[in-house]
Length: 306
Image 1 (spheres, rainbow, N blue to C red):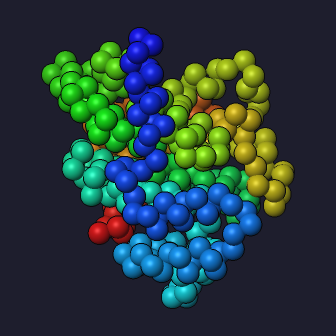
Image 2: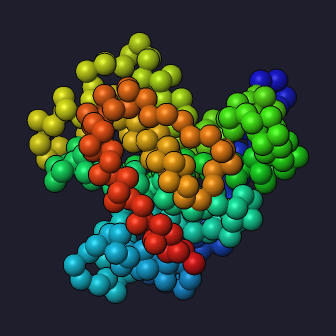
Image 3: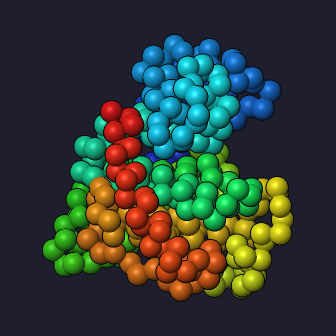
């Protein structure tokens, strides 16, 4: 990438805490969630000042997808149940909901479906054990294409050129991005979420969700790091070395969302599911068939932010 273009993109990222400027109360909430000394009750009380956001949080936590046995009416209780990373992702994503719909028709549905699918896959793999942080992969799935939004807003002409190139020359979307910008939305999303102080366990899957093999083939990755090899770590939350397992889940969720035709990510191509993904997640074709049959009904949950 030319240095001036890279500097221009990084400057845009550093000046983009929100898309566009979030309401003041939401900016304040985001800041407070990074402060371990601030109580959930304080954040909940502050959040009640944004009636729309409060209503969305309660709608999400009471959705059939989460499946809590009793209805949650207390906002502070909802915040505890959702967790800080999920909450932060929901706040940012709900605030840019309309913007995502305007930038690319179907992008919102694709992003949310990918997040829901990632969480479900992690839940099935966990099988009652705490191996993978399900809310973490939900956040990564929800935000995996956030870089497209930055490019569309800050570099509109380049964004339109990428769309045109991908459609007219039938190029893979990421390849079209690199040809026009010398950078992909995955790179932009990575730097953006780092700027927002998200943990590496979310940023890394965003960065490599189209280039899993690049992460997997890294010489520092132990090829024995897979789900099967760590299931003896009972009741211990586990993050794979370099987050290869989390990245595999986001890669798989992205492919499944595209293959089912839920939403639109900008690409007409559906990648094949790599053998390395199956190996890392210790899954087989029967698992995939079961997942595909069950996640299709998540499309009914895509109105959660409406």
